[in-house]
Length: 160
Length: 289
Image (cartoon, rainbow over all chains, first blue to last red; front, top):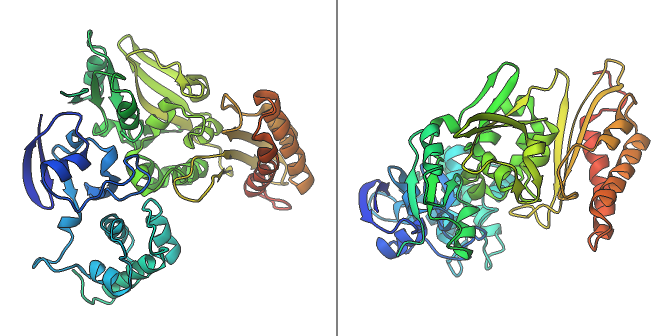
């Protein structure tokens, strides 16, 4: 079936079988491999994307469900010149990236949180990334990176 | 070769029509978080998914005639964000907040949670505590059922073949009511409920309990209000001993209804503590209400 949707701001048309998960459409049909396939059952959050601005597991959404809607993947999170966003820069600076497999999902979970709650507490940050597993960092650095980005944005510094 | 096809319904009536088209095994697609997992294990579960998730009328959350109506495709996040639900049914807000993680809450729907009817469904004890009703559309017309009658046992409802759950409604509890929900899982996020408790009640100006509703989840085969526990609380003044007696009865009811199981040794002290705690959140001691 034909699927038309806005992908990272670009109107996109793609032909895919009706039973194709959104994750497969992104990775295998469109070559956007930043979104990762982890558990495949909605528990690890590596496949997180924004669907109409809401964080979802793309392994548990059909591509067909995205028809007519807006999807943002990690490839859509950067400054206009392609350099890392302030949140991505904070992940680097605070050591929040080790193996990197969870990072795209973590960054999107952070962006989804900050869009709704510009001044989250550390508890709220933990809650917002509770659906994203990281086996390397122990999470502290990730929480730090999101927290400092929130502070900087509040102070008007380096908003992507 | 596609294992199943997909069609997006343009209205509730069209959805029911599509669900009843002969020659096809149709299933409703709402939040997709459960059904896609089922389809991965059993590709013959259905021939076609009828997507109702984007119908605006299935997302409405509104008050009508002293009842709150929640569209069946409202996501857990939409329920959590509703000021109307927060102000009339904290028990439901808290139950939906305890579901999965944000990704699941953004997709998963209240209607899906009811119809999927998992033994551990977080919204069910809250809805049954609220005396909620299910509004169903079938080719033969509308029907209304108490949620406690619709869900007969784990993973089993009496939703008629080809019927669509359209909304869930609950009567707004009288002024001065308080409600609360507690969940025990193995970790905070994404945990499947091991036990849940939901309570709702009201005290008179002297502090006496004049209404008590109490429901447990993941403890009994059928989720229902525990009348024997409610009877202990009714017409009493809140006190630690009263809550302990109610917790004792709750445990007795769990064992009477479920039998003594391998998990009982763990569940008995846990359920006791959770019952006492949730009652302490709903009924205030020495407080004129």
